[in-house]
Amino acid sequence: FAEYVTVREDRALALKPANLTFEQAAAVSIAATTALQALRDKGRIRAGQKVLINGASGGVGTFAVQIAKSYGAEVTGVCSTRNVEMVRSIGADHVFDYTKEDFTRSGRRYDLIVDMVGNHPLSAYRRVLNPEGIFVIVGGPDGNWLGPMVSPIKALMLSPFVSQEFGMILAQLKQEDLNILSDLMQAGKVTPVIDRTYRLSEVPEAIRYLEEGHARGKVVINLEHDSKP
Image 1 (cartoon, rainbow, N blue to C red):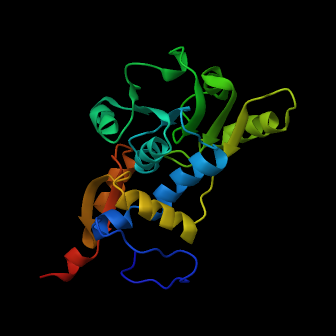
Image 2 (image 1 turned 120 degrees about the vertical axis):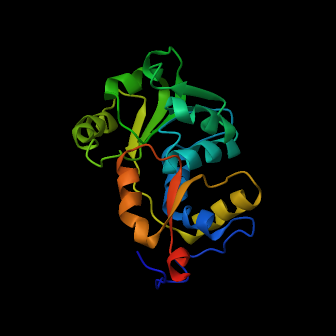
Image 3 (image 1 turned 90 degrees about the vertical axis):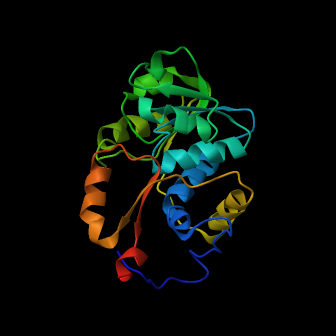
């Protein structure tokens, strides 16, 4: 954690939208870029598509819901009971409460699935993906669930008999993408969701909260708070 960093001006900088606080702006870069690149680059999202976001209430998921809506998609979010109304409030057309209903057995099908959770076998995701749909893996809460899925996903990617597409995303910060996100936020189409803000001295508490896996949107560390008497 640092108050100041040195970066190349032409790589990872964009002007902060005037309608965002510094706390909101701090929550944008990696999470929002990941959501944008997963939807646009890997998912090739188009207006009118049915898009499902698994992990819709998390840091990447809250951005993914809003960015997908900005593309004109019909968006379904998956989250827990306590987050259903929040996910609706940021634009989701439909919301599955995973504590009550398994979206992989709902009978609905999707053109694009962006998954941040990895809590179902690959066969279950394929069941709700349209024949020419795209499935994009972003990551998991503990960082290790992707391992068992890599081999079957690679096999499907190489198979000439599978019309569905499968991919993984590791975001790369690009100035042009930060500018796109800035425009979306200035237009009011995307707003960072901040769950909690902590002082620097409270970082251990913030990390413990994140490890519980129930954060809504982003958790922000405000260094300025510790500099005041």
